[in-house]
Image (tube, rainbow over all chains, first blue to last red):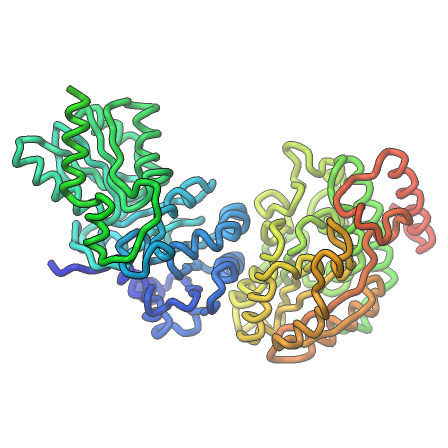
Length: 312
Length: 285
């Protein structure tokens, strides 16, 4: 299976939705080629609006389109759409509970050479804390297509975290994204690897490494960070007795924090976080950076062994 | 709209009643923003009772005109107009800012009938109005207008100019912005806190049709809006010069009345003045 970036799903899925009669529009901030909303702009120019380099205006124009009855998707990069326009997302989109779907690309360190200023590692935290915001982190291209469809079909604000780098497939065309569902992608009995986004495939690779040492790892794709599937996470933790959260995001406020909240309240077990450890990113190639920041399958497997050690 | 067919005297009476309601509800709340609510009373009364197509019985009717109060802290002037129009009963006004009230400290579209979108964080309304103008059905858009009321201090927010650029670029001719130029903001005169220079020239430079008027002259407001609406192919802005705290002698032109409620004694004086103004126009509460 060839690798594909989750961002490749964006423009093409909007084209499909429009073709199916869904009243989608898109507002971009001068990054239509990078985010792939250009594909939608080419097919439906009357439904595409470029705000130029003005992300705050992009979010609120989308909000106005939603007030006028449209399902409004927004582009730009994760760092700008969530950070620069945070007040617009909070006070207009979420406070008014509008049909605005943020689907920015270039999240995380797999952005690569552009460096720390453009590698958004705090977006899940920022979006997760907003009342009414749903946060989806698709694990591959197929999940991204379905995440966009789910957001279009479900009223209210959504955040869909898309990435720049081509990544291996975890699923295929048959995958359906269910809001608030964590997917068990590999069953196991000794330790739970709860992952999202690009880390799902790495958690699966880590499970293979652990299997060599006769450790049976269960891998869960926590594709919806909010609302989180507390039942599935607690059930897996009860079964295995130890959990590792894996994300291409800061260890503060993201998936690791969300899983810790669930475990703390429902199923306390030994727990570890794999993620970027409270630092900014830096320039480099995506795979170099994943190694540099400790986000490889080996790092995940090592964290799992430490959790097992603490359990026993 | 036919400017000559509008009953300006009736609008003056509405504005006078709204001013009374504004002071009464802010006094009952014990907090709020009287200065910028009173400065905008004639503008908002003109929109709701002279210009805009809207139906309180059907707040979601698709053919309605839209209003965005970008200067959301002036919520009392909007609540006074909506109550006067019949979107909700007048008895709600004294619940302003209280727990469980329909009437939040700043406009909340989830709670208040007739409020199109929540506002309060300054600088966002014009962008929202742009999106609404874009989203209206192009086949009927020329029959509908989107009105957005901004403060002059609010124009210090950079996003206002992102929206100004966007509206002109997209030829949003159904969009009409009105700037309530009362010249004052929390920390003092706008010209001293952060001078905006010429607001008219700035909008004109971005490609807007610009008109100016006395924001307390109903006929002037009507004519200015008609003038910018008559120009096709670009958005219009009316820069309306107003007096902050208009109608209450001790509040007029005083920045200190931006965001505080009058005391019991001050409320008595203010309501007596506003009552007299009402009677002078032959109106009553």
